[in-house]
Each structure stands twice: as C-alpha cells, then as structure tokens.
Length: 406
Image (cartoon, rainbow, N blue to C red):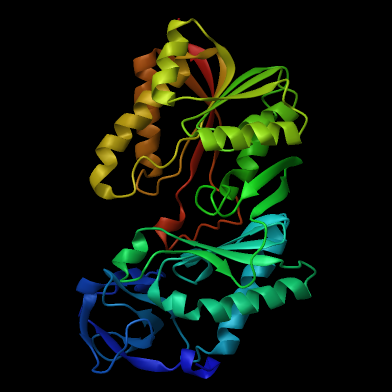
C-alpha cells in the first residue's frame, strides 16, 4: 500500500440530532449510539468524514464499528488529512517533549492528548516502545513510526530499535489481535536509562506496561527532598523508582515492597547499579498483608509512599477500588511517625480527583490522623492533560504531613 492510500476517505458518518457533544466541546471520540448513519462502502479502520445531522462538516476521523468508540477524530476543521498533516502532528509531539521533558527517557506520544488517539510511544534511551490500541491508528502506525524515527534522528536522538507492547485486552474490543514483538531488527531489550540522576535497567520486553512508569518522574524527584536522613517505606515499588530516589537523596534506611518477585529482583539490581545496596532493600510481599503486620510489630517510618497499580479500570468496579484505596491509606497513615510524611496516589482515571480526596479523608478519620497537605501533583508533562478529554487526567499524587490526633 502506498502512503496516499492510507489517507483516502472511505465514507461519511452522520451524527444524530443533538449528539456529538464530546467532539463539539473539543474531545476526540464519537460513540456508537451518537451515529445516525454510515455511508455504504465505508471500511473499518479507514478515514471518514464526520457530519452533523444537518450536513455541517465536523472533521475527519477513523472508524471502527467493532468498538463503542466508533470514530476517533484526527482533525476538526480541515479535510486535508494526508502524509504532511500526520508528519506535522508527530513533529509537534517531539517539539513539545523537547520543551517540557528530558529526552533521555520520555513519553513521546500520548494518544488523545496528542491528537493521535489509541497510540502511545515511550522513549527509553535509544529504544522506542509502542502500544497501539485502535484499529485506525494501527493502520497508520508504520507511517507514524517512520516519521517519528526520522524526526528524532534529525534532532540528534538516534533510534536503535522499536519494540511493540500491544498486549492489552482492549485490542480485542477493537476486533484486533494482541501483539508483542520487535518492529524491525531485534536488539537487547534490557536498556539502561537515567532519570533524576538515578540509573535503571528497563526491560522493555517483560517489564510492566511499556517497561517503566515515566509518568511519576517529577513526583519521584519531589518526594526525594523529604527523605534525607529518614526511614522510608515504599509500597508497590515495582522496579524501585521511589525507593531509589529516596536513597540517592540520602535516606538512612529504605524498604521497598512489591508482590512481584521479578520486580523485586529488578529493583535490587537497580539498587546495586546506583551503589545503594547498603541502604535500599527490597522484599517480595503483599502490601495489604504486610502493612497490618508492620503495625502489629510497632514499626514506624518517617516517610511512607503508596504507589499502587490501578485498582479499577472500569466504572463498574469503582466501589471496590475505593475500599482498597481507603484500606491501604488507613494502614499507611498508621505507620507514619507523628509529623512524618505520607505520599499517596491513584493512577486510575475512573477514581476521579474528588472521589480520591474523599477516600483519603475517610482513611484519615478512621486512622485518627489529621492531614496537612503539602503538595498535590499529577502526571509528568510529557503525559499531557487535555482538558477537553477527561481520560487524559488519570494520576493524582498527594504529599501530606501526618499528625496524630490529640
């Protein structure tokens, strides 16, 4: 297929009267129940012109009738969606990261926030890791990656290889097969990166998600300044990132905990890489079981960090997720010395900021603690938040001083 064929308009989508509220307020998605008609001959995964009920031009997107998100918009005001249009969009992604981020490791493309719905690309040193979750963007993916590689190398960032991590079950909802593997020549998938002065080995093949959680970059640097000469507990440590930032900041004793032995092994290796093996230790344990055991033993910490995985990935499980967040925060607060620090976060979009704050307040009341908020933060700016797309705001990060009730 030549490049021109990628950008041929396959058909027309007409909205029902009164629908299309999301895209009319600046969003990128059209749902199946908002569509009045799709022209005959339209091919899923291809570009379509979107019209309001009265024929008014709304933009260009790609369609997939297997998905509830039936159309994902690429443009809102122009019909000229072509190779130059996409190349400019990719270049804008790189320019934005050069403005806001360290390019040694960064999220280069963040789906809807970069107007490339369904596509994520992370850069770890000279390796790119790709996740593609939508049929239309998957069709454009080879062209986008060629553009990205060309732009990066032009700007002095060589690309040694690309690995795809599209194993998420969301692809099944799009009528796509899950896929993980090399795009182009094979390479050693264990990559060394440096973030905030901390060295890590990142396994882009077998690590979680794309291999490393870049969204907490600035939050890790922020919590480090509270850790000098302190005793620190880092829960859900993954490959040790918060723990290692604390150790490099001069913490006297750091314990990192994760339920995955693979993660603990990787974290231990990262501690050695940074000459922190004497002060930063890791253990494999279930945090929900460990926290009450530590409380029973009378353990107390100057700093407790709670960075759990998303407890909910759907609206249907929010109630259970809130219970989980409430429990770990209650237990975590009880382990903080009077006047010590609690850092706590949620990376689930469905746990909205208001609900997360309410859950933390309930945990504090149950633990008989008072919280003095020091900072509230979100994800690093290379994971931009597009205000018209609520889904792009997902990470909530609080730092509190925990005070005993008197």
